[in-house]
Amino acid sequence: MSVDLLILLALTVALQVVFSSAPLVSAEDVEIADVDVDGGEAVPDSGLSLLSAEEEAALASAGSKHTFGAEVNKLMQIIINSLYTNNEVFLRELISNASDALDKIRFLSLTDASALGEGETAKLQIKLQGDVEKNTLTITDSGVGMTKADLVANLGTIAQSGTKDFLQKFQEYSDSNLIGQFGVGFYSVFLVADAVTVVTKNNADVQLVWQSTADGSFTVAEDPRGNTLGRGTQIIIHLKEDASEYAQVETLKRLVGKYSEFITFPIAVWSSHPETKEVPMDADELAEQLELE
Image 1 (cartoon, rainbow, N blue to C red):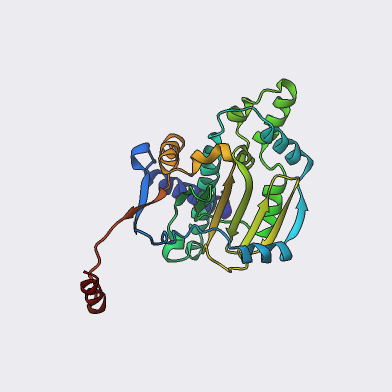
Image 2: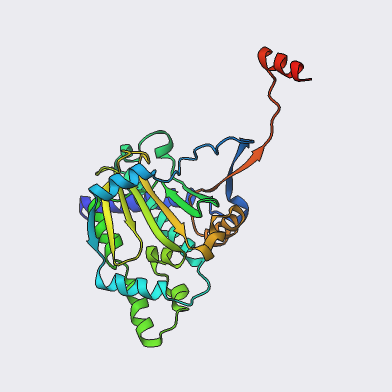
């Protein structure tokens, strides 16, 4: 048996041990990252922020425009025009993708411990944040991330054989229920999205931003904010009006519990609620109050 084969077998065994030691996530295990907010104050930054208007403008001027592959265009038209009512499956697909990305960086770390990074970056996890006011849902993982070549290849063409099978079956039966049966990977996000922004950082590249409104094209640009993720991928979903429920904490908790049965990484749903606190007056404020009385 060759040395290379022995090394590969050792890595496979080590990876199985690591995987088996991680607990599965159940509905009861979904972590709620709850934040108290004093009345009248802004919600603290959860690390899942949207791009500012200035940053969006910088991306528009610096980004390179690409056209989706013919099969992707066909797939997205099916999804956008579909009467499929069980659109919650998009979350199943995106959580599964995030888990795969985390598996990849964990595998790489078996031969290169520095690949994980330090601090928050080294924590292998998935975070979800809904924003009811902005009608957005943000999903972040600390997985392997994508390079520019990965973005164009993985999000611009059909890369999954299962998605190809879906297209073939749909042409035969024209049944939108096949979306749930086969799964259509990342593109299922357009069941609920008007527009999608993907921010990603791979150890071998700068932080990048991918954007599309499912109009047949997408743009890729270097993130003007620099490296905010450390490593991983963040998907910002601008929800359709009739999909606003996916910005709500209770909906996210229920669906994460439902679709994370075989996920071996922690999943946190970020939440906040207003809380009123009494703050003691200083001397000047107290004097002013006494004068008013």
